[in-house]
Length: 443
Ligand SMILES: Cc1cc2nc3c(=O)[nH]c(=O)nc-3n(C[C@H](O)[C@H](O)[C@H](O)COP(=O)(O)OP(=O)(O)OC[C@H]3O[C@@H](n4cnc5c(N)ncnc54)[C@H](O)[C@@H]3O)c2cc1C
Image 1 (cartoon, rainbow, N blue to C red):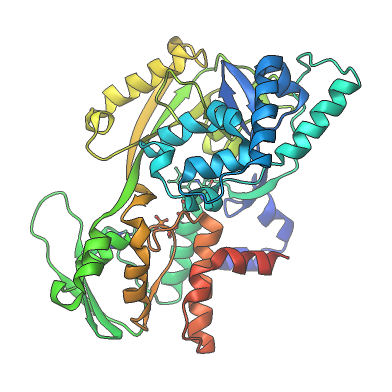
Image 2: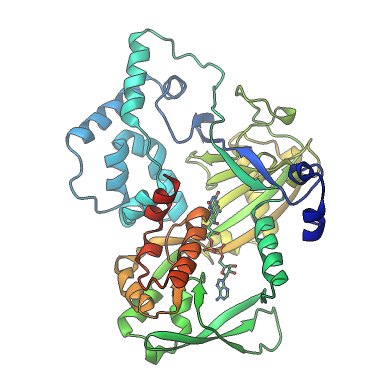
C-alpha cells in the first residue's frame, strides 16, 4: 500500500492497478478450499458422503451413518433445546458423533448440550445428507469401487482477498477516513458512556498503555456505533442509569478466546494429494479442520494459499495453528515459546509436520474471539431492549451485537445502520435481522 490515491487515479494503465505484481492495493481472487483431517486422512468439508469419504470411513460406519440419519428423519427431535439436538436432527447421531461432537466441544470448551441451537443455524452450512446418501447408494448399485482415487476437489467458490491479508483492507479504510478529515484513535478504549433515557450524549476513552498514567478524554456525538463487546459496553454506562436486569444479563455474557500460533516450515510432511496444481506441491487448503481427538488444535490455516504475497519465500510454508481456549486457562497462561513448542509437538504427533523443518514461529492471543451462545445469552433480549431504545446508539458487528456474524454480516450491519439514519428509519430490527437482509440483497 505504498501508492497514493492520486497516483492510482492518474495512472493511465488501469490494468496495472489490478496486477498484484505491479500494485499493492489489490484484491486477489482466490479459491476457497477447506478439508477435514481425521484418522490421519483428508475428508471433504463440509463433510459429504461421497465415494472418497466412504472408502476412508469403511462400510460398517457408513451404514451406521445412513441408518441413524434415516432414523432421525423418521423421528426427529421435536423441539431442539440445544446444539446437540440441532446437529443430530440435521446429520443423524453417527455423523454427529464422528464429525461434529468433539470439534464443537473443542471450539466452545463445553458440551454441545450446553449451547443454544441458534449457534448452529447461524454457523452450520446446509449439507444435503439425503442427496449424499442417494448418490452413494446409486454408486454402490452401479458397483462403482470406493477405491481411493486422487481427491477431486472443486475450486468453485471464489472469494476476494487483500494482497496482504484482511488487515490491509482496514488500513486502507482508515487511510480513506483520515483523508476525508476523520480522526481515528488507535489503541484507545471506550470506558465510560453518558446517556439520557433515549439518547447517548458522549463517550469517555483512555489510551491503552502498558504503564503510566491514563488520561481520560471525552467526545460528544450525534450518532454512536458500537463494535465493543456488549458486556463491556453495558459496564461502561453509569450503573445507576441501567436497569438491574440489564446489568445482570450483560455481565453474564460469555466469550471464547483464541490463540493463533504461526509457524514457518521449510516443508510439510503432508503433501498435495489432490488434482489441484499448487506451488511446490503444498496442500491446496486455506483451512484444515483438525478432528483428531488426541490433540487440542482446532484448525490450521495455510497462509500461502490465502495470498502467496504474505509469504516471503515461496519455498517455505506459513501455517497458522488455531487454539480455542479461555483467557487465563492452562494454555493461555503459558509463555509464548511454551505455546509454540506445544503446538509444534501436536502437529508432529499427528504426522502433519516434521519438527526438524521449523524455521520460525510467533504467537498471538485474541481475547473474546467468539461471543458464546450460552451463559446469560438466553436473556439477551433484555439487553437488546435497553440498547435499542437509545435512539442514536447502534450495536453492530460481531461482539458488538453478541452474534456469530461473519465479516460480510458484520459489515452489512454497519451499512444498514447508516442507511436507517439516512432514511429516517427508527427501528433497528433490520440490523438484527441482517441475515435476511443479505439474502434479499444477494438474490
Ligand atoms: C479466528 C477467526 C477467523 C475468522 N475467519 C473469518 C473468515 O474467514 N471469514 C469471515 O467472514 N469472518 C471471519 N471471522 C469473523 C470476523 O473476523 C468478524 O465477523 C469481524 O471481524 C467482526 O467485525 P467487527 O467490526 O464486529 O469486530 P472486530 O473486527 O473485532 O472489530 C471490533 C473493534 O472494536 C474495538 N474495540 C473493542 N472494545 C473496544 C473499546 N472498549 N473501546 C474502543 N474500541 C474497542 C476492537 O479493538 C476492534 O478494533 C473470523 C474470526 C476469527 C476470530
